[in-house]
Image (cartoon, rainbow, N blue to C red; front, side, top):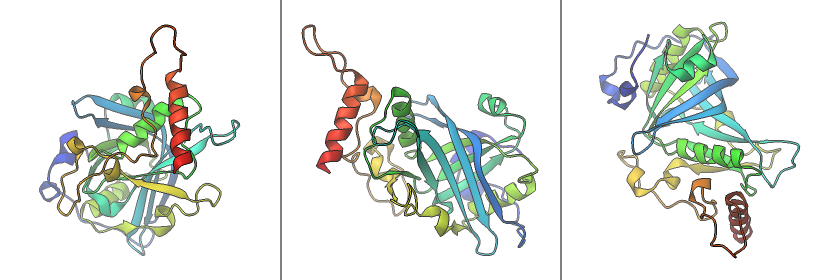
Length: 270
């Protein structure tokens, strides 16, 4: 079965959704599958986030599930010898439509391999970013750019996840049934996967809803949705927002250094 990217933008009522056919043996627990996320910026340009993993969980008995993206970043507040996981939580009840494209021909799918599918998410409420409670100052520019991309993803009402899902792990029939159940708003969130209290060696994570990061022009229009707020003050600017080089004769502060200084200063004032 295949569909176009525009399907995720249509009203869920106009999508042909086959009957949900789950049984007690339909539980799904798939973790750390290589994935690529794509979305469109406000000016229509295609954006891409790679080097992420995708988790998919479903419990047939409770009719609950959960979707999760994770990426590894190097943060200044953690030892140099290890990276730190940052997550995107996608609650099933926040999804308006979930469309499966099981034979995608996009470049992202070709790069991941022959058993790649595309899951097109249309959100009624934005996803959440989950980060450590410590400073988010990155150790390098690559991690800074990755954090910026993750922050952008949780502000999207529509996005696609290209993910390697071997049929031996999850049949396409079962995956289609799951997408149908989500699009019918039949699933709640599995608490064990949707809580951040046990993350980061038990210290717990900070959950930042995408709505709280949205600028007015990127508001998700949805019934019952409150107005978005400004970017929280404790968040450092993106690498693209830092000042350019100073005039000759003044000390030079690189973009990366400025980013770290801002983040540390904000973290200390919190």
